[in-house]
Length: 174
Image (tube, rainbow, N blue to C red; front, side, top):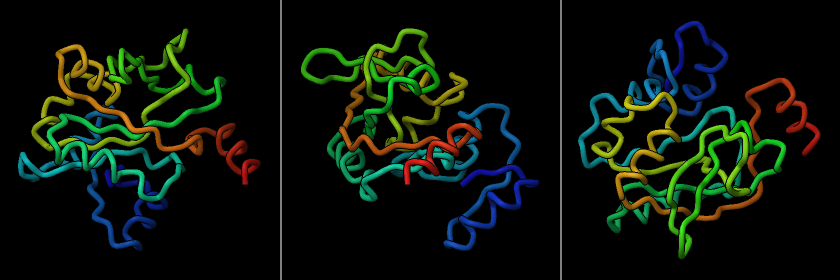
């Protein structure tokens, strides 16, 4: 988990669970993920996700990790979400046969009802993540380069609690 040093509330919970917390001041979301990967071997499988989201199933990383072990560059956990949230999300662009052709970051006109909410890839695949401000933008670059990005439909339970309005909706969802 990567957090700014002044975020005591954010730091306390993962530490209580035994997770390592990396203190950093990244300028972008992508830099935040890169800070958390520092020191990993290039073949380590790295899982990324967002601490302000709640989703199911709890074993959601299983299929993306299996895909990476089987040779995919990136495995994505996909979630079907409410249309009102699509314009502030990373929306999946599907090609033929369910292939992931790209990621539309916060699109004005979403190309699908599906977003990616968690991802797995080996550390060497994430090494150039700094090429894009947002991880979704980087995954889109990988798709356009012809890399093997596979998606796995996980559920329609995905809640972003990163804004006051979203947190209110999440509380109402209970």
